[in-house]
Amino acid sequence: MKSLRLLVAAHRLCAGLRHLPAVEPHVARSQLLRAVHTSSSPGPPVNTPPSNTVAPFDDAFAKDQRDKASFIQVLDLFCGRDVRRRGHIELIEAALRWMPQFGVEKDLEVYNKLLDVFPKEVFVPRNFIQTLFLHYPRQQECAVRILDQMEFYGVTPNKHTYFLLVQTFGKLSHPVKKYQRMLYWFPRFKHTNPYPVPLDLQADPVALSRVCLERIAADRDARVTVYQLPCTEVCDDGTVQEHSHLVGIQSPDQISLLAEHDTKYPVIVEGPFPLWLKKTCVQYYVLRAEPGAKKKEEMDPERSLYYPLSLDLDLERDLAEDFTFDVDEVEEGQVYAMCMAGSGDERTLGKWINCLQESNPILGQLPVLFRLTSGPREVSLPVQEEDGESHKKEEARESSAEEDEEETRQNRRMEQ
Image (cartoon, rainbow, N blue to C red; front, top):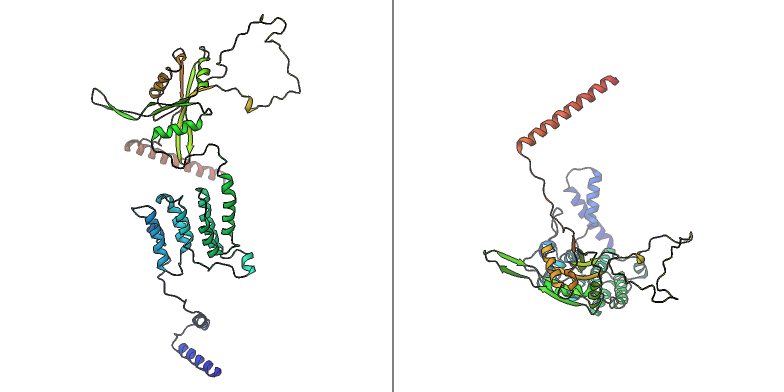
């Protein structure tokens, strides 16, 4: 019976060879072997795009309405399209790029939904050798990238995340090890910062300035004062003038230090200095003094005849002394106050100095210097020249190039 089946199969192959066109023998042999050893893939047919087109995953996320519901809808449509979920790695990589634009980069539910896109129980190793080597490396690296982005945004995984990873890759896979390291280190580093940044930064510039100044100030007794709120004012001539916010902070110790400032030296307003709070950059200004501007207490030399309070001794340096530079021993000017303003011009900062005179009357006797650095400027395009001048310059360049070519030719002739 078995031999009969072989004869029937050989007869069918010979009949198929009769209908083949006349080609070279090795080409016909390769086509025959390809026809014999190739079988159709099981499962429903999938419409694959041609090789010169891009997978339409980026187009699926390019929507006008970008929120959590629309993001999850794209993932649900992909999961329900095909049982085998072909192209899941490309979809996950595109989803990771689009998450900040949808505002779901810190949502644990969305990350678990991304891990649920992987086919289940397909990439689990079946023996020791598969566990020893990286089984399905591209899929495991994609899952590790998801966990890396969770770590970057400070999202702590939960038990559902562990269940999805074990169901997809097994207990001894690299994504599960990454999950275990995150659960080990996240609770230990969660409360190490004594001055944590608020989770939700306020959009109000006055409230944001209050948070930033309280974070910069080293004294807990420092008081924040709002000198000016953002508003618009209509002048007598009908013009509209906008006033930016102006918020300052000063502690009682700074007030006492400013009262002891020597009137011979001026006070300096410096800035702006950048301060980053997550992805928000703000700028603040400082009222400070130069080194050595503090009043020196004059001591009476006859206060104690036997034990004088000050000795003027001119001692030479020893050869064994260290002349290296130490940052901790550098004298800097004392900081008297800080502020944050919407516009850092001298007019707005001058209002700040005038408001500080109510609690610091000595500012009326001190000269104030403004050392303000220019902010970021836009790149200015060069001025376009007139057509006539540009044409003359091009002609001059061409004539100089021709002269150089003639000189090189003459030099070559002389060398020959």
